[in-house]
Image (cartoon, rainbow, N blue to C red; front, side):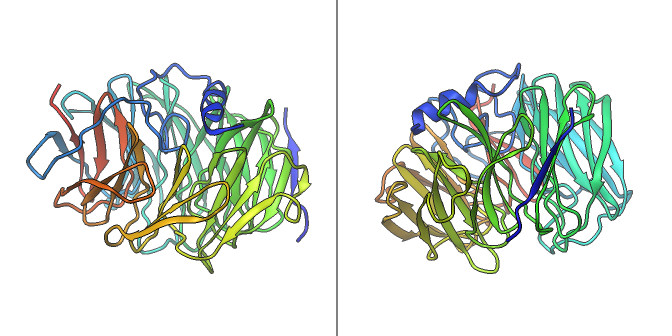
Length: 417
């Protein structure tokens, strides 16, 4: 396939966690959950504990109804919980702020109005999870004309709002913004004119833009890593997996596949990238970091075409890669060799991506049931918990509590503070 173009304007798992943390210029606290998949984009919490057992009316600190529809996940920073929602009645996109302590609504601000445009039946106008640096909250939306990226302060005042490009996708939009240094990176892969853009966090002005060779939708949120001293932005989209230099958007390496379209966020660890694609076939591949240019024939360590997900992002915790498919089939994979260590029927239909706290894996099904298992190959179940509400989002973990968005509310699981 032709090589994409970029133009500029203007280790091991433990080592990866340390190095990735150094890339985030942020005033958020260590126990905050400031963006999609947590502080490092890995789904792993640094908390030492989290609730193990709960029920619809047991071990629930608070529950707050959220107007409108949205499949964005909550984020937590400085005692506040943020999420986005879309209201059909006025075609608004809103950022909502709740008090972390009691769930009280502090403010809800409309940051954009416009038709939702074409989208998948399971998508919404507010499916992209916001991000925060502890000073501002950043969110991305689309309508039938283009993309809108906005920044608001912690009082709900709009700081800036920009349109980085037109947008068309048969299935809508869902990729979440990523913080890097003084910038905000947004994945605009689409069926129209695809792009990835970095904006200045303070002004919203464009810093760099990457243009892929193929215009094809991708819902995948990129992830940051560092390998041998070089910072990389790992991206899946346009039929390939690749590493970009987050400073200027230039290409470091690329590998073909594993398939054409992506939803999952890649995992990184053990000096490798683990990429998961879901359409037209559900496949995965592992790429060894350290290559330059097209590394398809030189650095692909393994590929798999069985038991792979489309929507739920797998999670790499230490020496185990935990995978849950959209139909609820669980696999534990050796990340280095690709060997399947264990497979089990975890539950039913699953959109939520698992998270890890204190060496446990938390897996929410669409029904709201959450299965908690040990971080080991045998799928040892520690607990099964019911919420009695549908869940199509992923949890946030902060200060010993779990925050999960249901179809109609935001629920805080854990002790009341």
